[in-house]
Image 1 (cartoon, rainbow, N blue to C red):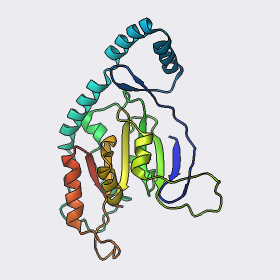
Image 2 (image 1 turned 135 degrees about the horizontal axis):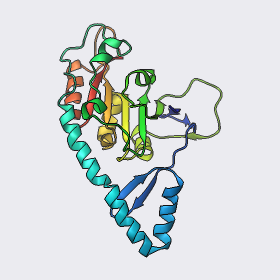
Image 3 (image 1 turned 90 degrees about the horizontal axis):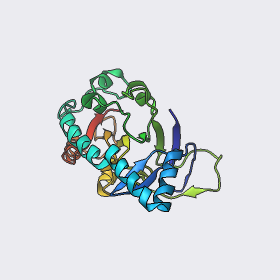
Length: 248
């Protein structure tokens, strides 16, 4: 699996460790295509030869009903969410996402939907301010190749930087780098999740692992009471997000 390290937030270094081309062709609606030669040929054909393009258009829609498939996916996901592990109304003592105790209880979306993950143009995992090792070890990837992005929201502590910097926010980065027709898994903290909700891009995430740092003896800097963590969790479920509690 390809790993990509990206730093966002202040003035941050832009890493280009993995290049992906996503083409969107507007037939009756926009469709995401894989980055291969046939996709480019289809673009040229549709532009240069309208009558052939019309034939290809009908055949493509018949064999790739993306909007309908996405609707079916959302319906099946809504049913699968009902079978997710129960939310913990009180924080567990000494629970940690690094231990296998909690991970074994997690009911992953592909398992509940019996999804082979083979019908998506792209598979993406985004870990914000964390370590993606747990994903590689535990997530049911179906032996498919996920693109892994480890996103840092702070400046990297290194002097080895280029002259090329970008200023961006996570919602903007997400909107520019993933598409609705792709399968996207994310792990992020509650503050980041709230940004995604406020910027109306949370629907780009198919499965979410949310870490909510709450006010307790172990985290004196945390100001969020645990009941607000539960409220945010409930809001996400109401929005149709397949969300898990994460204990990191």
